[in-house]
Length: 254
Image (cartoon, rainbow, N blue to C red; front, side, top):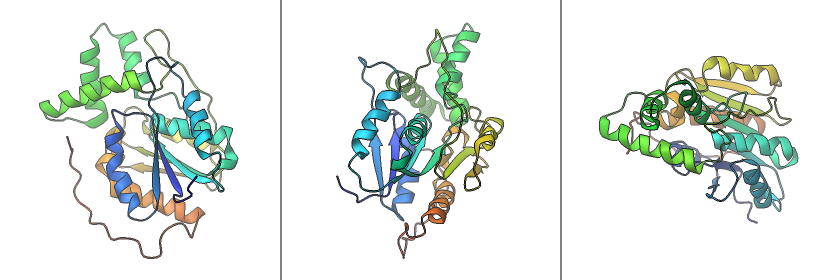
């Protein structure tokens, strides 16, 4: 297979992957980034194990380890892969992934469904406000539809019947964990739980704002931190003369 990339971004949320685009566009101005996508079909069991196996098949013939990164469930897949196949991973970058990897927005949704006798649509509307902040009515409606699809398409083991938890712990390679101080899912307390498994070379960074999808609203700020982490552990990774990218105020794109 081609080794034309050094960073592999994992996505397992087809309905939400557009929120990764601003960050990936920023990073691509400095480094070769490839995207690996996984979409669960209706006939597959709801588990990330299949995604991990397929990712191994993709990277099996690569002649050097790769920098893995991902947001949410994509990050949880990256974490599981790094634990199972550490020789394939040079560094691990996780965005909005809790020290308890199963503590994602799906878990919060199903917990509310178990706790309150209110409709799916109403809880999804509440989830939009929690994950994205207040949005115009037409935008909020589109986001409700996107979250609804994500519940069906992403490989999450949570359900109305049971919330499933994953093992906690770190990894052997350098790891960076990013979160947002305004994220109600992976909140600061949950994020700081990672420190119990950190090595000296690991890094935790918090975006001051941005909710759960902080990398969408603040791609440059997040990208600068990630690039700095990668360059520290792989000094020759970045191009000698990186492109100059003009920063713009974050806006929500439909």
